[in-house]
Image (cartoon, rainbow, N blue to C red):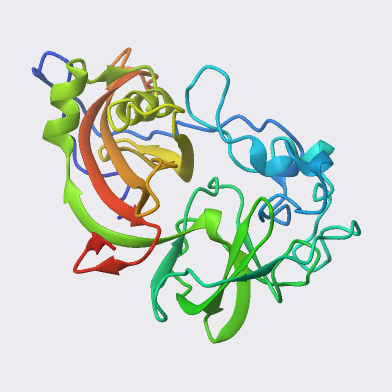
Amino acid sequence: MTTETATAEAVSIHTATGHPKPRRKRRLALLLALSMTTAACGSSTASLDETPESSESDVGSELETSATTDGGLSSESTESSTTSTEATESTTTTASTAPEEVGEALDFFPPIGTVFSVVGVRWDDDLNFRSAPGTSNPVLDNVTSIDVGHTITGLGQAWQFTDSIWWKVNVDGTEAWASQRFLAAPGQTDDIFDEVAAELGVLKAVDMEDLADMVAGTRHAGDPAPRVIIVAEPLAFEGVGAFITIDILDFGDDALKGERLEITAALVYEDEESDEPIVDFVVLEGVQRTILCGRGVSEGLCL
């Protein structure tokens, strides 16, 4: 996402009726902050893996918080980590002392050389890459959902446990394993604003999280509802606009794992003349989609 200066020249803010409202250049602090639900989410070392495979008692731990009870945006991450054996994991230590099942090799995996992105990991967390399949093995690296500084490619090996599948990958020259739940091959990117706007009708929302929830609701009507995770910190700048990125996952299709949506909006203020303007609402201005593929990509399309 391109970051522009917060002191850009004055622009016209469009309301839901489409009429421009000019405003002056002024300072605006960062608008949006996500609620921190647990101490585990606040630590950069509380990274993610698949749920430990050792026993049924691990079901419902930190990575089983895939959707809120009201069907809205998920706080996927370590929200339930206080009850998980992985709650106090450091990026440099072993996650759990509980014995893991042995598992077995799996013959089905994306083609060797498939380029992956980390998906479904909340913006204030990251994904563990380990020396072997399973959460008891040492962590070799950590990558966030929007980290473009790492190259992750498939090595054509997979390992299956009762409740999870792990893929062997190369991360910047280091061979490692990670849960396939949080890996996808990015496909083609296109602009879907007109499609989303037609579905929504009303483009106005209280804030960027509310707007992201609205947009996500237009993308998939399956049952159960897909996971929706905020993967880039919501930000807003006067004279530029507001930004949020979400992953929508678990479409029930092993080829199309989901979509990544980069959402932009205009800011509309309560009092245009105030020295410290307060944002009244936001208005959707753009939606860019990247498809996320589970089995690999060919010419931008999922295999």
